[in-house]
Image (cartoon, rainbow, N blue to C red; front, side, top):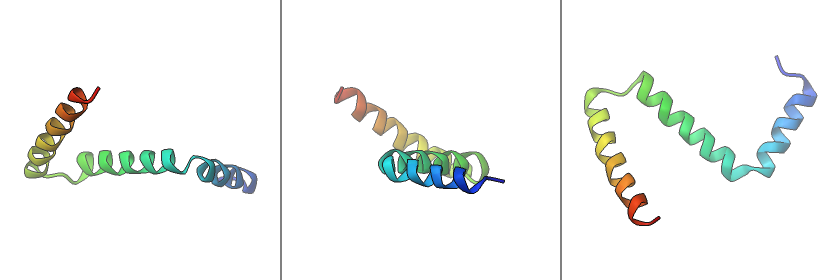
Length: 61
């Protein structure tokens, strides 16, 4: 269980790092979905999306 001071520190960090905190939350949600709920069809679709994203990032280095 977190102490009140730790909760306050966490909230302060998240408010100062809002964009990065949102990135981390989104990444965690994606990983959790893939590992716990994704069907084979979901994985195939995600693989296509990831390949397209990877190509885009490689072209725009």
